[in-house]
Amino acid sequence: MPDLTAGSRALALDFPPTVFAMEQTSQLNVSNTTYAAGTPEVGVVFTAPTTGRVQVTIGGGLRNNAANADRVALAPEVFLGASAAGTQVLAPTVTRGISSEGYNVAGGGDYAYRGRTTLLEGLTPGATYYARVMHIIFGSNATSDINLRDIMVAPAT
Figure 1: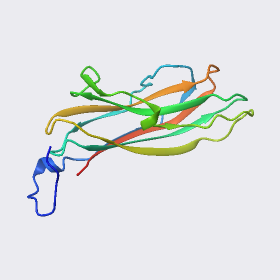
Figure 2 (figure 1 turned 180 degrees about the horizontal axis):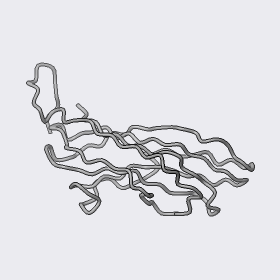
Figure 3 (figure 1 turned 135 degrees about the horizontal axis):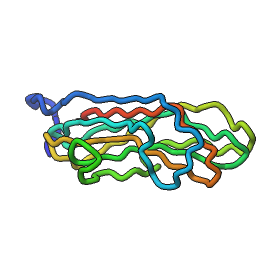
């Protein structure tokens, strides 16, 4: 995949549109200990640039609302094709995502809003991909909440 270096002729496929989606439907008392998409699903369809690299940013409002150390996390998942029916090219993992704190007090806190950007490489230039936000809890008490989820995918040089 070509790098976009100084003096390169810019092509339309070098910079396909940045895409963004956001949903404010709360996901309360999250209980899934494997990654799930949530309802409604928050995702975007994007075209890979000529570099084969994109920046994937996810964000959300997260909290634990009980006297335990449960945490909730958000992470991106990416598929080849225009839906989650395609081949998975990036599995959700908290190492590319965000997590709440695990407070050990009742009413553990207000929502903390955070975001994270990760670089995804090795995409096929011009191909269509689907990226979505996934969530998971670490703990067993189903006391963590999500107030907002968003995702943005932008071409990277």
